[in-house]
Length: 493
Ligand SMILES: Cc1cc2nc3c(=O)[nH]c(=O)nc-3n(C[C@H](O)[C@H](O)[C@H](O)COP(=O)(O)OP(=O)(O)OC[C@H]3O[C@@H](n4cnc5c(N)ncnc54)[C@H](O)[C@@H]3O)c2cc1C
Image (cartoon, rainbow, N blue to C red):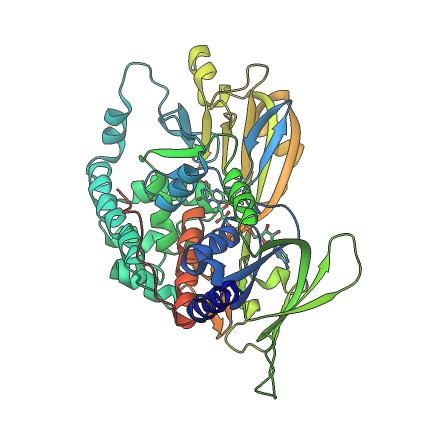
């Protein structure tokens, strides 16, 4: 009897397994453990669950461009810092992980200057409301901006409904088109021309437009195309937040959680190349793409075949020697460049005399923004710690953004005489160098190689990487013939 029952159970098991094979069907390698790579793993597991085995390769630090720096026991954001209130995937990740979201304080007093000698605008007045000051200087442009950006933002956030309902975009152009036709047009014109054509005044463009693009992407309104320009402006006047303890906790803790699931592996190694494998024997069950990597602390290069590979780091002319993408005609790495940006951390006292500030104003001054793009620096701002959202009690810590390494002469232009100390200068290849018309890389480089950071060439930010990750997970799910699971949670705006 027992033998008979076992036999029936075996048959049932075999039947069930025909539909739900417990051994993973698809082997995917993800190169890069920044927010783009880790969220790709998250969405792949979301759609494919046990049908996918994932190996994540990272040559450096988990989190990539999300990183904090420790100064005397306090942590400060050194890379990606702020998240928009409507960035719903970053919010979803933080909520699922139980991470606390801290709002960035609004309206910290600042001075906007052209070249450091003349104050264009300041929010240091104690008794005049900032709104009045803005209206006084920029007139109707200030009012129009809010309505206009509001409309653009509501078009942008359509992406969440589209993705919840399984809509895929096959390239970056299609992504922009499906949200707002104007977004796609925006990539073909300079931000200056775009704002001008939308009726904004020269003063508004030279000051507000310029400040937004210099601070967010280290490019001027004349060199950057209008889509990243728009994304930069969207940050102004909105509620912004960051993760308590540092934004890097999102990819780090997501990875920790993924590693507890079945069939997720992490390899600390540098991926040297990815190439297609052309198999002659049709019975050969090996993967379609070969990845070669060098583990950290080893000189030996290993090769592993996968069904699919997802590249989750930017490919550009400066990393062409570190990573080789073979036999793909669709992609020319030389076409893409990154913008160099330094995050300089200093302690010190700002030079207020230049701006004729009273002692009280000088003490409250939090940031200086420079709108002249030929200057060696873009902005200096006093930093809040990522844990308390407060300034350090022992000393004032400032972060200066600059396109190149700064000299001590440069620092002297910003700080009071010799009252400063350089703590650390972190050089980044921070974001794509945008141009117009913007060349946009392919999301699917070939049948089995996907590229998360293609989307960064529309505009670089954490949320765009998470959107791109979900799109790639959906593409792959569909390509494998699986049903796309509709969103189990309705995302609320
Ligand atoms: C200074 C600065 C300020 C920013 N400010 C903001 C902001 O306020 N808000 C915002 O949303 N965004 C901001 N960004 C942009 C944001 O940080 C990025 O868009 C986002 O973090 C990119 O994530 P990613 O995972 O796509 O790439 P990355 O974070 O670059 O991750 C790629 C990973 O791949 C790894 N890797 C690369 N090559 C290989 C290889 N061959 N083998 C193995 N591993 C490899 C890298 O080590 C890295 O960890 C800022 C960026 C910088 C630098």
